Image (cartoon, rainbow, N blue to C red):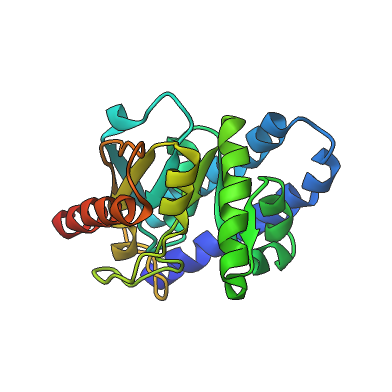
Length: 232
């Protein structure tokens, strides 16, 4: 049954995504907020379809911790789910991501419309400078920046070293950090079938970045995220 539900979910998602993203090139000249609102329909459909086909829902803890000003989200990365759900949970946002994702037909077209910070992971310091420059620009425009400091999806219950890009953006720009933990990998893993249940996404207290160095910002974020993930 899990296999049938998972297959049904992906078939429906593909059938919705293809026509939806085919229209996106026509929106290049429209205002950014209008483009994002249109693309947000995809996230809304995906979460609804996920609940309908796989009986997978979610709940959010700590919504009162979401600040009024644009911020940097440092989040655990276990699943595809959080890349979709955070579009519904947080204000207008974009992501730091590997540039290869923009090359995916249809999906990449829509992703490019979000003004992502698409980096070459092999570029080293050049990529880091790009994150700081473009990230600060997005934040000044009121666009939140989402960073997955582990860089790639981890298995549920595991962790990887936190890269400094998001924390350095926070130090250089002065914008606050919002740490985010969740247990999505338990239900929608990197590899495997989608399981029914209720994902919990937990939003931590805002970390002020004034007079705090990159290493300490990274440590505070990682400590809160990983401890909360253990509790979840």
